[in-house]
Image (cartoon, rainbow, N blue to C red):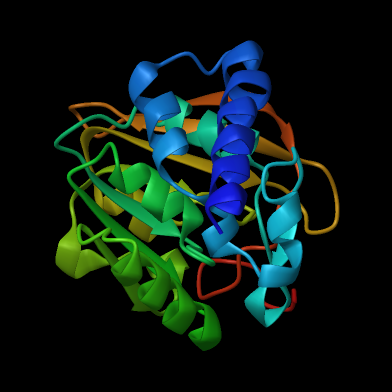
Length: 222
């Protein structure tokens, strides 16, 4: 067991160096957060040996966990910092929420798949991420009772940025999410809400995500 843990620690350090730092993720607090969270704990046991590859992996409920670089890119783009309250739409197995929780003061994750909600809560509790709350529901509506949010990340692609997310963003807050058709290459965008409420959008590159499903998302996607 000790050998396995040591191997995973070495693989995790290699992932941070090759997939993150060498590709432009240089903020120490982000790299330290990825070093601190065991990705193998957030995927099925049968895929643990692939945990630190630069690719998505299957998780429960026929969903996937994003590749580490994309998670890091979104965290860096959202400029998450100590003291922030962060909303993650589509929290999946809980991995990104766990990483974010090592930086932010509080993380609210919303997930529509009941099975994922249950396993994410169990994993986060077991690993001691007590500043994360996973809520079952429609992420396109945000989470008004915990708003405003300093940063909102969505791990699914919509046709537009849902209005409730914009409304629940704090002044100077940032939304990072993919926008584009399901099954095609999408664009990762960052939207910043200025003090007066005006929005500034910038593109961050091409990505592929599952569709954002809900009242403000795709109606017929799976």
